[in-house]
Image (cartoon, rainbow, N blue to C red):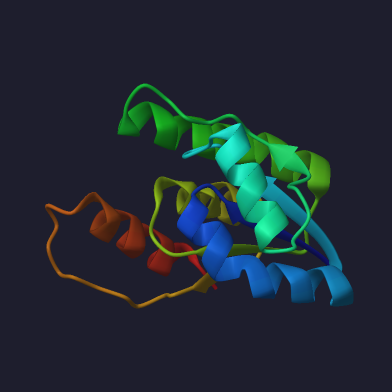
Length: 139
């Protein structure tokens, strides 16, 4: 089984570090970094300190604003999934990177969403919109 894990922010890397290490041991695991919140030196420290390997794919999807970033995450993750051909995609949380779930779902790839169901019920919070989209999209 080939599983693609999508990360884009340092908190996602931290919170998924043990899951990614376990996936590396038990399945064909591909790490996709959207680049939503990417600083080469700072992220290198996170990967080294958490003893996880570097991502296989960097999407460089950080845009000038949220709308551009979301568009780039969806478009570039779609291209990545076309090449990777994962059997499943693992997404965490509510950042713009989690919207890679849209691309996976359109390709009929099962989406596993960790932290599904978290809610603040305040639609003025951008992450709340992402949570609702991904919760409805995930398997």
